[in-house]
Image (cartoon, rainbow, N blue to C red; front, top):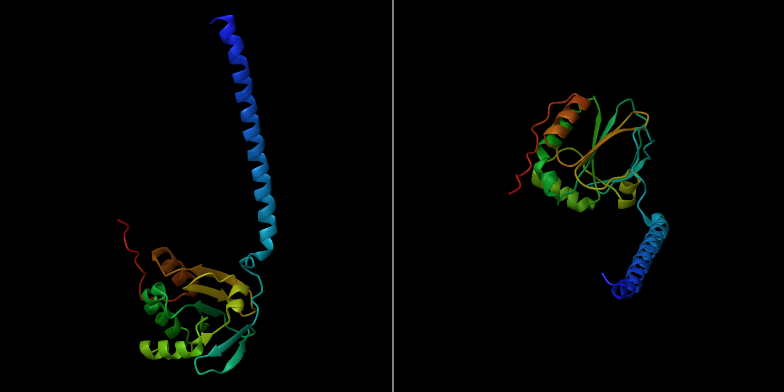
Length: 197
């Protein structure tokens, strides 16, 4: 390579090096801005999901007949909160397990099915499915205070009001076994997920 061509290549190499530094600087600034924005958005997030042994707050509930009351945890029995929605497909697939939990309570635990659906929809749902267990409507803010994010979700609350365990989703084989072991119940059957093509 001639001295002339090397001399003309030096500014190009210098330019590319400066370009790389500029891009690196822009990347660092971009990351810093994103971190700052993320911290500002933190205050708008929903509350952190409760951890096991956090205290469960009392729930304002309305039964399907329209009667409002407060659900507290000062009994001698643990409480199973079964969060569901009348329009949830996974709740429909899990319906036989819902019935099994309700039928096996018999003084072993309190079974409390809760939904954010209005009481009239819950009454219609109970009628359509022949449910004799009382269904309760709760506010969305109450559900958020428990860290609830979707249906179905099963939550165990101790007699002293401490959150013990929570499972989200339909009772697929692993969840199915865990719930049977934790509650010492026999459920109708695991929900089998469809195979992906």
